Image (cartoon, rainbow, N blue to C red; front, side, top):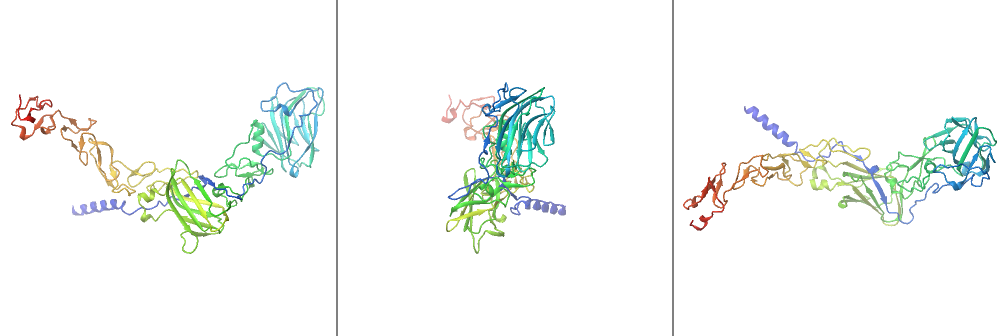
Length: 558
């Protein structure tokens, strides 16, 4: 039996030491949450926010606006602009409209119009240049030998874009078709709208034709096809357009879509913004080919707003591609608007900033695990960082990337938690007798010794009939008792109450005895009188001392 007892004691000691070995940061944690952040910065004098491409639609003409055709469509599609002109070719007064249109840089252009047609045989909708013809057969559209299924019995929006390659769009930008062949462009092109001759059994209606002297972007074509008054709004510099030969927005960029523009086939990309501009988003876009650059100054400030619904335990902040002109870096952590912690380093010998090579520099935020208390840990839980750079004299600060190393905000009590790519996490496997969405509360009947403990190693079994809820107090373990119950474990009835039981909302039943005249109320609800009052005449009824008869207080009874 002695051996068994010794093993039991050893087991208890081992279990207890699971919680006395000191705090450790979870090894599975550690993620860069910068790309889920909203970055902003001061734009002091001279910071560059010019757009490399267009900021408005290119030059546009309306080939049908001055058409002399008398025959017009009886009704127009809702998105067509009537003032841009319309015509009907059905054997009447005219069979085509002819104009000469200018192209843009490198001969790029876009033509768009609304079409409704009924042709018994193949009929021409339009032609441009020396050889490009768009024809309709009743079941398909054919442009320069490339055919696509189409039904023009009702109004359809059609656009043709040339930017070194030719593409046709039918109805919307998602119906995109690559047109083969070699098209020869020039500074100006002849445009013909209509069949060029009157043929029996056909009718072609056209409206709102537009010729642009450049290749339109996908956003601009979407605006035309939908009749929207404005472009799709982007998070950063929405007015900056993609260049003509990279017309498609890259929807995969982080933290916002559309920071880059893709070539026609998506194999190459360029920045939609000035890649060395004053855009704070370049700090968190995961691309070392772009850089945030301040204007000339001595103390710019960067702000990173992390996910609103999450707080992260911040490990360190790392700067990539930083120009060697910074003297001091200061990082302030905030949660719900309150400043929690400030850490800084001055570059030079003995600096706590760590040089990571190739313009890399990191500043550790979290302290050593051995020194962590609950208060210190909670000061690391942030959803906003404010970073201040400083130099001795006005300079242009430049940073390619800013990484924020962070862990799940689980108080170190979920060793399996990991932050996902979109910045979310779940504290699902709390240890140390903890629970809640952040593993920061004690489970039922467990408590912490100190306000600075992170785990709940101690158990407290409050009386289930006397406790007010399923929890002892988080710190110290005191039980919260029902109104008629007392004691450290909520296991005693208060004076003049009896029968501790779960059926009573107050825990114990109140007696009818006068509390000033009894020793106690017995379990059978009879009153045990005080000894010094026994010589008096006491009026009793059914074993209960009546409250309203208090003649014993005066030493006489009538």
